[in-house]
Image 1: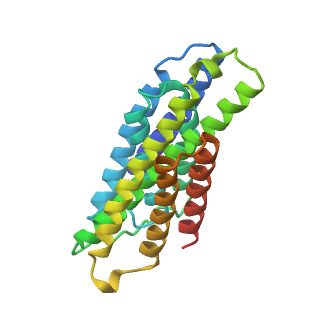
Image 2 (image 1 turned 120 degrees about the horizontal axis):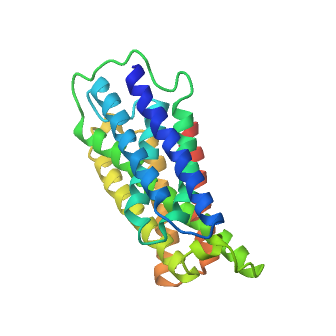
Image 3 (image 1 turned 60 degrees about the vertical axis):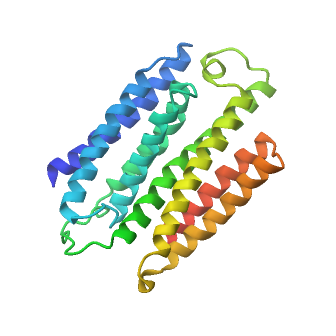
Length: 256
């Protein structure tokens, strides 16, 4: 138990370090790789922590608040590491690290991790696929929302004519950032689609409110992305939609 929690603490400290190092790099007007390195180490610690919980449960570790937050932090870090090198590593890390840090701090709240975990005797493969893919998709959708926040910051900096300093220098162009938001959101939507399909294949008795909420979330993202790709949507509206949708869906799931 102590060793497992230690991995969560290490991952949390490394995520905080990634954010701090990224801010320092921006202030010195140097866009370096230190934030990416810290987040990569945090990702490794997250894997060790998830392995600890998965071994205890005998299935995908998504049975309590601590595991859900840790899994989502891992998912967000994963998508950051995959896409960060394309969209200016340091700045995306500065915006991503605080959310990863917050999720892991929540998982460290006393009682977030169940102590007396009973190992599963049997596994419903479709339920496992549904829950894991759904939470995994939220990592991509969270990163799309983070990119949306980056859009608002960059847009403000440009309108205020604040062209100097590491912040603007570390930013991608507006058009490139909008493309990043849309593409990352599409990846999350596709993964969520797979999760919903797996949920529909579960035994009828397992069809619950979580699947219904996931389906509603899927429809809303489909409408937003469909309008963007088919009819066109200004970057500000896309950023607003992705950010609001993610926050609202996260709040709803937290209430369930």
